[in-house]
Length: 313
Image 1 (cartoon, rainbow, N blue to C red):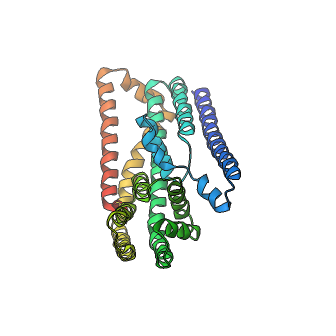
Image 2: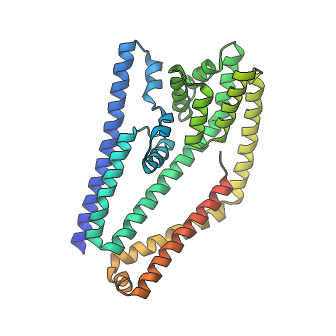
Image 3: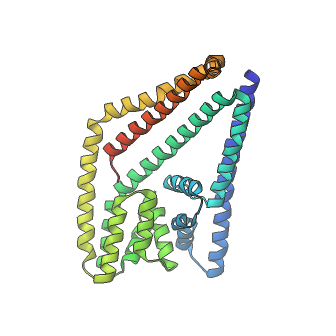
């Protein structure tokens, strides 16, 4: 069994290395291509920074639902990868499944793969949530900079572009991507709506609606942006108080999700025959399948409750 575990660990290390190589190669290829195009067009440094960011609205053009979901999940973390690169990563992860089945058996291999995918999904979602919170925290200062540029007689697109150049990460690449797509001819309200759907930020939807109303009917954008700034800051204060009051409950929920999973992994590694004996009998097989299903349902309910407490940004 130790040899099988060693083979699986080596295969897992190779998979992780291949994923990192795919990520670096995809980013380098896209960066080089953008630089060549902008050199041919005579673009400056600001244009290069804007064009390096991927056009996230292309998610609607992805027909495969699994690939579309994976692309959105990765883009939410701030890692800009083209769909072909994400597809290659998914293919490499798929090749890990038969290695796990050969090394640990059908039942234990499926459990280990499921746990690895679960922890990978949790890592990406938590990183995306942290990035989303950071963007919302930076949004009031960004909008104040945009209002100052807007008061000088510039358009909304020019105001966002000027404010983005002076803003820190992660809000800077987000609005540089918005400015790039607007310069390519996309309406700013459509670009903001796409960014809101990908990053799940409610305030970007409000910006998209304000830009759409202003384009069709006119009105004062500065008053709308000031009202939005006040609403964001008040909501942020309320969210901080709510997180402080529910910190103990959220930690207990995470423990309830992690401890049973780690315990199953420990038993599978230390005594694989324990679950193999259960799996060999019909009644034991039903108990194990039911346990896994109920555990997954419980984790889903807990994280759904946590998401409802934290709320959409």
